[in-house]
Length: 69
Image (cartoon, rainbow, N blue to C red; front, side, top):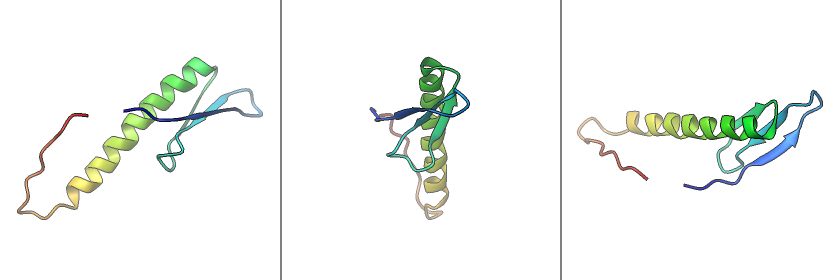
């Protein structure tokens, strides 16, 4: 999957990375490379957490099937 992210320099010099498509998915790094590495990790964690919430909300008689994208 592809996501657009924004990079912005904070007052303390760190680079803040956000993924607008995923509310609250924000990370940072000392430089652009580290910020991008960290936001990739944050996106993965955000999507995993949302998937876990969805799986817990399934009725007990339904069996979830995992699909790789």
